Every structure is written in C-alpha cells, then in structure tokens.
Amino acid sequence: MEEAAERVSAKAHSTSQNKVAQALACGRSFQHVLESYALRCGAAIPGGSRPFRRLCVRFSLAMLIVTHTLAQTIPEQIFRDAVAAQQRGDDETAIAKYRELLKLRPEVVEVHANLGAALAHAARYDEAIEQYRAALAKLPDNKGLLLNLALAYYKKGDLAQAAEKFDSLRQSEPGDVRVATLLGDCYSRLGRDQDAIAALTPAEAAHPDDLNVAWALGSALIHAGRAADGLQRVIMVAERGHSAEANLLASDTYLGLAEFERAHEFAEAALKLDPKLKGLYSLSGRIKQYLGDFPGSKADLEKALAENPDDFDAHVTMAAILNLERDVDAAERHAQRALDLRPTSPLARYQLARVERSRGDIEAAVRNFEKVIAAEPDWLRPHIELAALYYRLQRPQDGLKERAIVDKLYMQGRKLGPDADRL
Image (cartoon, rainbow, N blue to C red; front, side, top):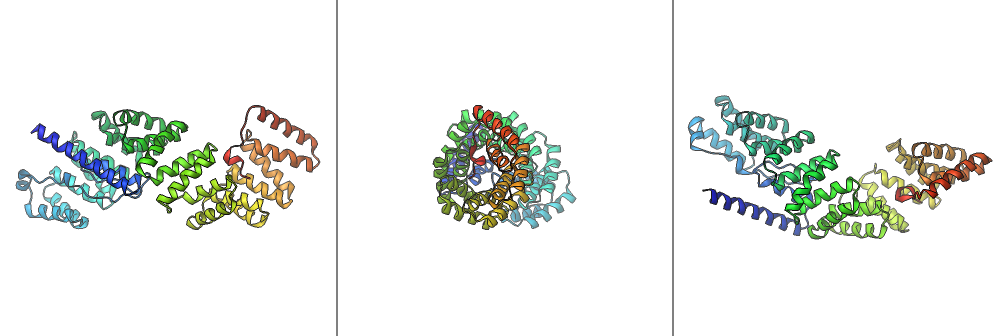
C-alpha cells in the first residue's frame, strides 16, 4: 500500500510538472503557473493578489472525503447533494447543504473541511477560515487542513497569518518545495526579503531547475539589493518560462543599474509577450527617454497615462521631456500632478523646480531646489542647479557654498543615477 501511495504521489507530481511546462509554453502568466504547485495539495488555491493575480481557481476533490463511516453518521442524500453541487461549481448550493448538515452533525470534521473549501472557492475567506479552524480543532495534525487554512489566509491577503501557517508546514515537511515557494512569496510581499531568501535557498538547492523557486528567490534577491544574483534567476525564468513579468522585472532592474540597452531589450521582450501588462508602457517610456528616443518615449507614456492617469513615473518623465521641448505649461501640469500624487517626493519637486527655472521664476525654483536638497542632501544634481541659480540671484556666497558641496560630492564619487538625471 505504501509503495502504491508513493507511485500515486510521484504520478501526481509528474502530472503537475507537465501542466506547469505546458502552461509556460503557452506564454501564460508565470504567477498563474506557479500556483499549479498548490493544486497538488488538494486545496483551494490563492489568486488575485501579487504575484499570482491572474489565477483561475479550480476546486480540488482531494478534500471531498466520502467514507462508509461518514455515510452512516449523517444524512447520506444531503451529503451527496452537497458534494455534487461542489463538483459542478455550484458553491452556494453546496454551502447551504453543508450548513444544513452541520446543524444535524456539528461534530463531523469532513463537513467542516468541505464547507471551508466551498466558502474559499466562493471568495468568502473569513468564513472558510472559521471552518478550517473548526476542523483543525478536531484534527490538529492534519497537514491538508493546515495547508487549506494557510491558503485561505493567503488569498484573503492576511500574509502574516499565511506565512505563520506555511512556516509550520515547512518545519514538518522541510522538503516540500510548494510550501517553501509560497512561504517565500509571503515573506517577500511582507518586505521580509532576508527571510524569503532563507526559506527559498534550500528549495533552490534541491530543485535548481524549478522556475517557480527561481522567480520567487530572484525577486527577493533583487528587492534585497542583490541585483546581480537576482537577475541571474529572473532572466532564467524570462527565457525558459517566456514570462512577461520576469522580463518586466529584469528590465526595471537594469534601468536601476543605468544599463539602458539591456533594460530596453527586456522591455521589448515583455511587450511582445503581454502588451497589456500593468506598468510596462510606463517603464518602456522611461527607458526610451534615457536612450534619447523622445517621440517613442512620449508615445509609450501617453499609453501608460491612458491606462492609469495616476502613474507617477509617467508624469515625472513626461514633465522632463516636455520641459526640454519648451512646452513649459504642459510640463508644469505633469510635474505638479506628480507632486500631488507624492507630496514628499524629491524627484517630483526637482522636476517642478526645473520647470520653474525654464519659465524664468528663479526664486520659486530656488525654493524648491532647497527643499529637494533638505530631503536628499547627498543628491548631486540639485546642488549643481542651485549653485547656478544663486549666482543669477546675485548671491555669490551661497553659490560658493553650493559649489564646495558639489566638489565634495563629486570627489566622493557620487553618481547622478537614472532617477536623478532625468533631463
């Protein structure tokens, strides 16, 4: 029996892996594909939240436990009707039937478990959690129930609770790559990148070709400031998995490294795979601006703003280009909108100051450059701008002071950087 169970488990693993490969070959969302891991756990799988936003949730029958004993302890027809409704996707009928059963037999664990699955499938996560917890109170060591509870918290968006449950599962089954991947994703989204790296590194060692692990670990490494290590994994996902999301992250990371040609290469690859990917046109517009393709940049930024009128990066970059083209009124509208979106942003205020300088309102420009420097004293470019304006206002002592700061920062090897050097 144990050997047969192992063969079934191995077959399920192989089948799931094949589904992952097929989905990747079809160019589907990589986040969507990653969730196929959890399908093997017989659970309602989370979707709709980053990084698994476009998941098509399917109900697994693994938790539908119909036993001879159960049939003897509750009204059999009601149970069968509930299961049948659940199988055909009629969650509301299934929920009503299971609740009816609980009034008759509240002690039956299987009904709590199945009701939890139906509620989770209907996106009623708080109620699902209540049912899973009730079932776990009677079967505290049931890993399938604990996984379903973790996934319900995950899909609800309660990542702290989800991480706690996934971590309990990982401790009991440290070799389960599915649990490690979901735990790492929770940690990464909570800003706990070092914890994500710690959870995912052993999984990568055991499964070096697993694209799901590579994506989760690569993303965490990039967020933790280890761009080179993260890019190695994310590019593997982009190339082998044909993932638009991975190409987008690689592009954005290369932009942060001021490697504009590489950034453009990956942005173009992402556009071919999924031109509707959120934030892609905004990123492409920024990259083209740095490459000097202003018409192409403006075209992409216009698409980005049509998609999201509150796109901060698009407004900032458009302001820079329009100011260069001496369309000062339009540039000011975009710079002011960026500042309205993020009132404490030094970058938005910097662009507004440059527009004011172009308009000839030197005193207003000086006030804003001074605010930028107060917020970012080691940012070289505003000191250069401010020094020149002090001389124009006949304030040579202030100008000399700023020149000294410029020389000091230059000697320290300060770089303008992509965001600082926007035209």
